[in-house]
Image (cartoon, rainbow, N blue to C red; front, side):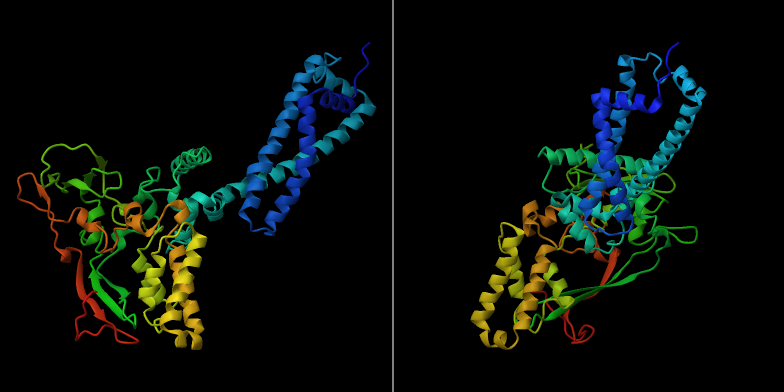
Length: 491
C-alpha cells in the first residue's frame, strides 16, 4: 500500500523543486511585510511625498501579485515532476483527512493559511482602494509626472478650480470618460518615455468628455440670469504705476429654462436651438462657417467672406462651454496682465518708482531656464534701482525685495522655459477667449464677415451685443472707484 504523503513537507518540496515557485516565495516573504508596514504608514498619513504612493501602489502591489502568480504556476507545473502521481489530487487530500494526526496538522495549517490570506487580502484591498484614489489625486497627475505636467499643475493651483481634482473634469463622472482618459494618459506616458511626446500638454485635448456633460455638474447656464458687473484693473508704466480701470456690464443671460427665454452670452448653448461651426484649425480659432438651426427647424448657414462652398476642416457639432471658456482652469497670463495682478494684490509695491515698467522689463528677458530667470530678474531690478534710486533703496530695501519676489512669482506662474513655454507663444498655444480683449475670442465669429448664403443675414460685430462698457481706462481715485469726470487714455 502507498504511504500517504504529508502535506506540509510536500508543499515545501514543491516550492524548492520549482525555480519559479522558489523565486515567488522569496519575493512574497520579503515584500508582504514591507507592504503591511507602508500601508499602515500611508493610512496614518505619515508621508506626503507623491513618490511614496508610486512605490506603494504602482510597484509593491504589482510585484506581490507577480510573486503569487509565480508560486502558483511553479507548484502546478511541479506536479508533473513529482514522485507522487497523486500529488494535490482528490485522493491526496482524502488521505490527509483520513489519518488523525495529519488531519490535526491539516486543520492547523488551514487556520494559519486562512489567517494569512485574510491579512493579505485586507492589505491588498486597502492598497487597491487607496491606490485608486491616489491615481485620481492632484499629486499623481501634477507632481509625479513633474517635467511634463508642471505648467498644467502650477496653473491649476493658481486657478478658481484649484480645489477641484483633475479627474473631475478630465475623466468625468462615468466609466466611459474615465477609461478613455486613462488610455490617453498611458499613451502619453509611453510617448514621453520614448521621447516622442511634446514638452508639455497642448490644447485642445480631444480625449476629454463633452464639456457640458462635465461643467454642468456644477454650473448650470439655464439657472444664470441677468447681467454681471465686471472690472478689469491695470496700471500705467509711469513713475507712480497709476491705476486704471475698465468697468463693463457683461450680459451673461440664460441658457433658457421653463420660465425664461434664452438670452445673452449663454444663448449660444441653449437647448432650444442647435448652433455649430466649422474651423480650419483644430483649436477652433479660424471659423469659416456657422450653422444655426432654429426651434422650428429652419436652418441658416453663415459663410466667411470668400467661402461659398463646402470646406474641409474641423466640425464642431454643437457649441458648448469650452468654445468660449477655452481655459477655465489652466490660465496663462500675458506678461502685462501678470504684473498687473501682482501689483493689484500688493506683491509688487506701487510706491516703488516705475515698479510696473521695470518689473515688466525684467520678466520679459530671454532666460534659458527657471533658475536663470530668477537670478536674471533679481539682477536686472537690483542694478537699475541701484543706479537710479540708490537713496530710496538704502532707506527702504524691503520695497525692492518685494518687487523682485513679485516679479519672480509672476514669471514662475506663467513661463516655463524648460517646457518651451514663453511669453511670445502663450497666446498661440494657450488662448483664452473669455473676457480677454487681447485675443480673438468673440471675434472668431462676431467680426462681421460671416454672412448667410443670400447675404441677408450677418453675424453682428456690435460690442454691445454681449457687454456694455461703462468706463474704459479711467484713472482710479485712491481707495475706491473710477474718476468718472475725467476720461483716461490707454497708453
